[in-house]
Structure formats: structure tokens, C-alpha cells
Amino acid sequence: MTSENNKEEKKSLNFLEEIIEDDLKSNINNGVVYTRFPPEPNGYLHIGHTKAIYINFSIAQKYGGKTNLRFDDTNPTKEESEYVEAIKKDIQWLGYEWEKECYTSDYFQQLYDWAVEIIKAGKAYVDEQSPEQIAEQKKNPTTPGIESPYRNRPAEESLELFEKMKNGELPEGSMVLRAKIDMESSNMHMRDPIMYRIIHAPHHRTGNQWKIYPMYDWAHGQSDYMEGITNSMCSLEFKVHRPLYDWYLDQIYDPTLIRPKQREFSRLNLNYTVMSKRKLLKLVEQGIVNGWDDPRMPTISGLRRRGYTPESLLAFAEKVGVTRRENIIDLGLLEFCVREDLNKKANRVFGVLDPVKVVIDNYPEGQSEILELENNPEDETAGTRQVPFSKELYIERDDFKEEAPNRKYFRLALNKEVRLKGGYIIKGESVEKDAEGRITAIHCTYDPESKSGSGTEASMRKVKGTLHWVSAQHAADAEVRIYDRLFIDEAPDGHKDKDFLEFLNPDSLKTVQAKVEPSLKGAKVYDQFQFQRLGYFNIDPDSTDGKLIFNRVVTLKDSWAKTHKK
Image (cartoon, rainbow, N blue to C red; front, side):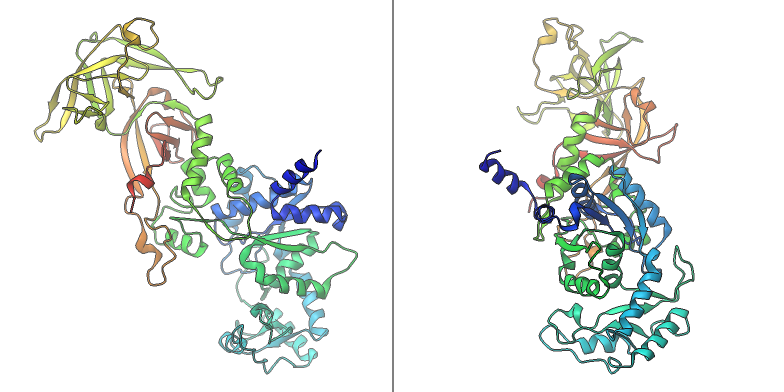
């Protein structure tokens, strides 16, 4: 390989891969690459987590390593087994399998024992002050903090109180265990951080066994260490936590074992979206959405229900890339990724969302025929399907005007011809209307020699408009849910003086009663299709044998930017 190729290969590595490759060249950790994905089971995973999942699993795979799934279950008041199962389902749906399923609660006893040793070493103490007093004494990065009056209490006294905390003999919130580090550090996380707090609440795995629970900073690095994790990769907000991560490891580290290395990457932030679990939970609890898997939610389960594919989410994570700088990603990129994937996979079908009847007056009464239409021009193996054609059809109401508004109007109008896709050329002749003047039927004539693919001279005739359609006699009824973005503001949670709920999109869900071709009667939940000229759709889990329900995944083209120009 030439030096130029070497430079090109090096350039293609992201900074996390460069760190790992440098470690491998130095034989740090004996060539082992072991990562972990450590979600807190206090909600469902969202699209932001997809990036973290992708980074941890794909990097380990690239270097022949392994990845653990570890649940950071250190707050029993917010965590539930429901979330654990949902997280596991989402990761497996994305196509990943973890080496070990771990829980921070697996390590509660060891974490406690290590905390006891740190107290004995004079590097931790029990503080009886209120949270407000502790926060006040920490001051700010430019003002040295004030030491707690309990900072230098004898280790034996702290040990005795710590055991009482563990045994549930003290009221919730009455005491905490703090590390004794540096109250003058410019890094606020080093100013005697809290290691344990008292919580009298049952845990989803340990029940009522514990009355004290470790803080994230104390539990995280030690869990990495116990699992033999080599690369602890987390989002950028934890960069300021890294000195504390290392300080805690220094207190327990055995040089003969693997020492984990924390490094940080930028989070995935999307416009027109909120990512905070607290805010997503608010949407669920207030009934603004229909659960965590509502197709308008940025959760992985919501995206799955809407019709996104695992491949599209992982392609999105790959395109976003691994960087050290925070930025906002355009939701249009995510939509592009699913369009690109479904264009290859989704069979083409006919569906009419706002049907109006077309009657072909010169088509033989009582006759119908079968048209053989291509399923997917992007997939040679997709084959064909049979679509019935008859005297009465449905087309989109928007595809007809009594009089063509201008020369560039290429849809159906009186005295104007269009081609029915895969079928015949028709010409608008007259209309029927109800008492309110609404069109109830469009009467047309057709050219029987113009059938697509028949090889006749008429079939070769060019007309500028092509419409999709459904045979009225054979059509299946379907409910179609038209989803749009949940918020109308690019940064709904970025306004200090306004609540994010003020920016809800009132048109984020519209439901229509549609007509679809009969081949869809046998479709199964999560099957995906391209409704020709309209967009990509999939079967919602609410569907039953007697009722088809489709969700619109995404339009064929990005219409948002055009319709929401400033």
C-alpha cells in the first residue's frame, strides 16, 4: 500500500477509531476492544440513542471486539422493567446482539464495599447538610467552594453513619456520602461530589434490599472496570466528568487489570424534535401522543411503528458521523435515509387517499380485466402483481379540475387526456355534482387501443399526465394516518421564555378513509409499500383482518421545506 493510500485510510478514521488504533499499536489492553451501551431504564430509546448504539457496537465489531448492554439502574423512582424490555427489543431490532446483559444493580454490593474502603482511607465522608446547603457551599467555577463542616469528621463516625444509611435507619434525604477531593477545583464535579444518597423506594430488580443508591459518576466507571471495558464512549456533556471518572478509578485500580478509558463524542440533536426523556414522558402522560411508540415520537419504537427500517436509522447514524462538536442535524437527512432504503425495498401499489369516482362511459358494461404491473423497478426479483381494471374507478380528487387552470396542468380535466398508469388513456367528458356543487362522479371515455404495453400505435401515444387509480368494484377500504412533524419550530425546547408544548403542530396527524388496490388485503403488520405518486406507507399494528390501517412513513419528496418557507 502506498503512503498516499495510508494517508487516505487514516483520514477516513473517526477520532474514536484513531484512539483505539493507537492503543492497539501500543498493545494497550492486550489488543482487546470491549465497549458497552449503558442506557438508564427510565424511558424508551430515541433516535439520539441510535448514534450511541451504532458507535459502540460498530466500533467493537470493526476491531473484533465485544459490547455489553448495561442498564444504569441507580434511581429506583424512575426506572421500570417495561423500559428494560423495550430497550432490549429496540437494540435487537437494529440488528445488534450484546455480549453480556448487565445491570449496575449487579454491582451494588461491590460498590458499597469500595465506598467503605474509600471512607477508611479518609477520602469520603457522610454529610448531613441539605442539598441546598451543599449547592451553596460549592459556589461557582471562579469562586472557591466552602468546605462542609462534616468534611473532616472521623472515618469511624462516617462508617457508622454510612451503615445506618444502608440499613434504612435514617430518613430519606437526611444524609449523603461525599468524596473528599478539592473544594477549590475549577471543575465543579471535583468539589466533593456526592457518591450515595438515601432513597426509600423499591428497585425493579433488588426490591427493598437497598436503601442507598450510588450516583452515576461513582457507579459508571467502576461498572466499566468490573466488566473489563476498554473504551467507555459517551456523549460530550460527560467530558467535564472525565477527571472524576479517573479519580474514582484511581482509588480502586489494580494495575494488572484493564483500565477503561472514557472518551466523548457529540450527541445527535435533531431540529423540530425534543430528545429529553422528561419531555417525551410529558407528551405521553398528557395524552398529546398515543404512547411511547406513537409514530410522531422520535423514539426508536415510534419510528419502527411509523415504518422506518433499521437500515435507514443506521445509515442516518453513519452519515451524521462521529465528531467532537455539537450541532443540529436536519430532520430531512433522516427522511432522506428512509426514502433511499424504501425505494429499493418497497413494492409499488395504488392507493387513493381522497377518492372521487371516474366512470368510463364507453367501457363495456359488466366487464373487468387484469393488468400485470411491475412490483418494484428497483428490484429485478420483485416480480409483478395483478391489478383489476373496470368501468368505474377511483382517482384522487386533486387530480381533476373541470377546466385546466393553465397549459402546465397535466392532470385530468374536461376535454383533456391523461393516462391511467399501466392502463388506458382517458378523456374527461362531463361531471355529476351533488346539491352542494361537489363533484360526485367524472364521466370519461377511453381509447381501447391505448393499453400500456400492448404494442399498438395508440399505446405509444404520448400524453403528459399519468394518474394512479383503483378499480371501484375491487377496491379495499383502508384508514390512512398522515403523520407530519410533531413541532412547527426548529428548536421547540430552545426558548427560555416559552414551554416546548407551545410549538406543537396541530396538523401532525390527519386520518383519511382511502381506497387501495385489492392485493393489499393480505398485507401484514409492518409491511411497507410505495403508494405511487404519494409516498411510502406501512401497515400499523392497529390493523385487523377486517380493517387495514396504514401509516405514512414519508412523502416521496421533501415537501416540508417548500411549504414552510420563511
